Amino acid sequence: MPTRKTTARGAKKPLPPETDLRRIAISTGGGDAPGLNAVIRAGVLSSGRRGWECAGIRDGYNGLLFPEQYPDGGLMRLTRDSVRGITHLGGTILGTTNRGNPMRYPTKRRDGTLVEVDRSGEIVRAFRKHRIDALIAVGGDGSMQIAAAFARTGLRVIGVPKTIDNDLDKTVITFGFDTAVSFATDCIDRLHSTAQAHQRIMVVEVMGRYAGWIAMNSGVSGSADVILIPEIPYDIRKVADAIEARARLGRHFSIVVVAEGARPIGGRMSVVEREAGRAERLGGIGEQVAQELQELTGKETRHVVLGHLLRGGTPTTFDRLLALRFGAAAVRALEEGQSGIMVALDPPTVRYVPLEQATRRMKTVPLDCDTMLTGRDLGICFGD
Ligand code: F6P
Image (cartoon, rainbow, N blue to C red; front, side, top):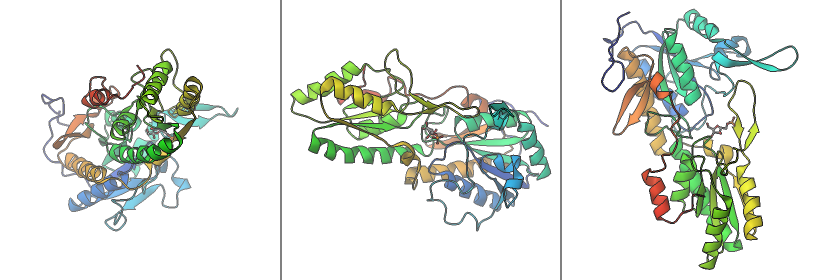
């Protein structure tokens, strides 16, 4: 196999166009995000134009690990007809899972405990058996790490980044994020009127895992009074002070947006569940903050958890277009002979970055970013 040169930006220089691609597979892994179906459609139509067949792996990689459990053998034939009219649909027609890391597959032992087992060899063999020449892996940080590991085994792999959390590095944005932020902003707008009518504190908990992007962007856009994010451990007394200062100015209600990964200074993140083979589940911090604020301020307080509502529904135009662009770019990358790369948004273009680089670190909110500075200039309290 000819070796590829690395360009100044770190991406591999493409090989001459490949001609041996006949059949490619698409998988969607991790938590779903609005835009997954748009990527699938773009991938299938772009492949069809090049004369390649497309197969969709069911439920992450489970379709290849447990073919007997699926009427279609775990691989869905993807044709022009099967992807018709799906661009605007949330979810994924292939299904997904966030317990399906083939390198750390959760497996039950006889005593009932779960252990993690490396089953990646089975996937590589299934690729050969089904004559799959290349894979487009759509997912978040975990899925991109899996894609990078497959690329190291010699499989031809292109990663497509998705996550509502926007915590994937080396791409300015992931699709799903805009839809989640738009919905959260709409909810914050709705909470304003009820908070004002009852002169209450309303605490809104939003997803985002260890990054505060959803909380910050929706909170600033929705004119929240307080935004708590994982990047800034908070002091609850400072939050209470900010709310009381508003009351002295005659504003007897407040909106507090809390990222699920937020934590008090010297405290821990609020974890709901830990289980082998999957990321820990966060949640509960909104309720905790609400209770403490009620005690400290004496004001009636309510909390609401937006949770999975942020992941559902129709992708915004921005997310649809980005997802279509990513899907088509992934196919172009395969045609160019690329592998081991992730498509990424670097406005105004989509470029390729090595998966190894993209998975090195998590993209958290920089404390000096323009949106954060804007929030501070608007007088929003960040709990510090
Ligand atoms: O990564 C996307 C995400 O929605 C996170 O914001 C959240 O912490 C997690 O997934 C929830 O996962 P689950 O669907 O397993 O509850």
